[in-house]
Length: 254
Image (cartoon, rainbow, N blue to C red; front, side):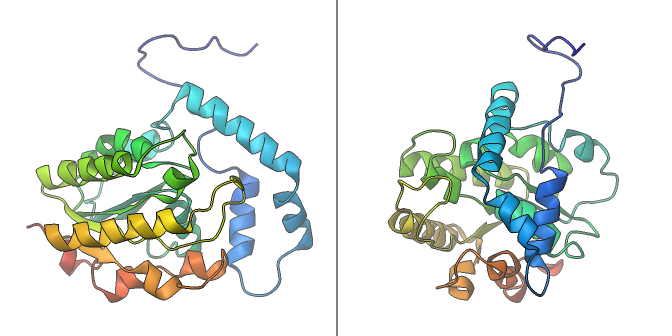
C-alpha cells in the first residue's frame, strides 16, 4: 500500500521522482562520449511514449513540489566542506555535471534541474545556493522560460526573477556569474515556439546587466554560435573557465 499523500507542512517530504532517471543519465553519458551513439538509446529517446511518460512524471512532480526543493535536499544537508561555487540552472547545468564531473569537485557544486524555469530556481535559491555559503554563484536560466515550461510569462517576469536571485546573492556576499544564452531554432518539446528572437533578446539583457552591475558574464554564445543541440553544447562551457570567472581566485569574497 502506498503511503498517504502529505497534507500541509511536514518535517520530512517525499522526494521520489526528483532528478534524472537511470535511463536519462545513461543517455547523457552516451551522448557525450566519443564515437557513434548506440541506436537503441536514440530509439528510446525519440520514442513518443518516452516523451509522454516523462511529461507525466514532471507534471506529477510539479504538483507535489513545484520548485523541486526535494531534489537536492539530502545533498545539501550532506555538504560539510567549504563551498567555492554553486552552479544553478536547468538541463545544461545538470548535464554539465555528467560532461565534466571533475570540474564539479573540490567545493564546486552543481544544482541544475532539467526543465526548470527562472521562477522555480528563484524559489530554491536560498536552499540550493545561499544556505551552502558559496564564494560565488553561476546562474544559467532562460531557455525554458521562453519555451513556457511552467506556463506563459513575459520578458519582465524573467528579468525580475533573475534580478531577485542576483539581489539575494549579493545580500549574502556571494559573487555572481551570469551565463549567456545560446540561440537555438526550435524546442523539440515545444514545436510551436520560435525561440531565436526571444533568446537573443534575453541574452542581450543578461550581457548588459552583467556590465552595468559589475558582474561576470560567461560568453557561451560566442563559443557555441551556429552549433546545433549536440555534444558541443554540453561540453562548450569553456568561456566560464577561460574568463577566469569560475576559477578559485575570482570566487574570493568581496
